[in-house]
Image 1: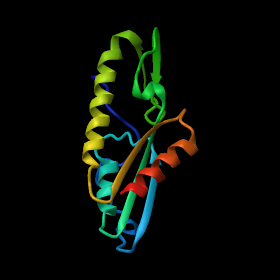
Image 2: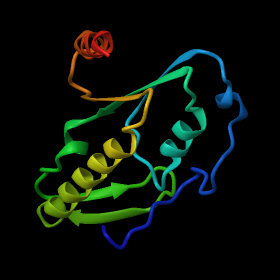
Image 3: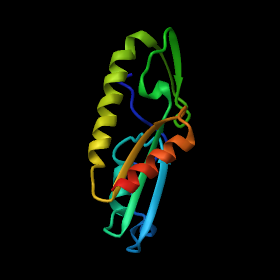
Length: 141
């Protein structure tokens, strides 16, 4: 898997989004897995940043995205590039887990910015629990 390259239709050059650059008071909420090929999401957040804006990111990941522990052989099929690769789950477990932990830690560090808040949650977490946590932490700041 280390030799595979990301592919698909996601833009590889930095995109400009003029609508995101307003200077009005705003609360912007983004919900995604925030997995990125380069720094697409970080670039978008940077374009939106302004002292009058609060940017809240809810990063929602599935259990298998956070910790790969599948056993057996797997055919990974990239829906964007239509490429497939067969891998042995146990052979890639440590590499995947180390890589995703490094990515998530780096992503979190990159978002330690004024007026930017990252909330990480799992697909199995209740929506009301995630929103309650957000509201409780927001009222403390």
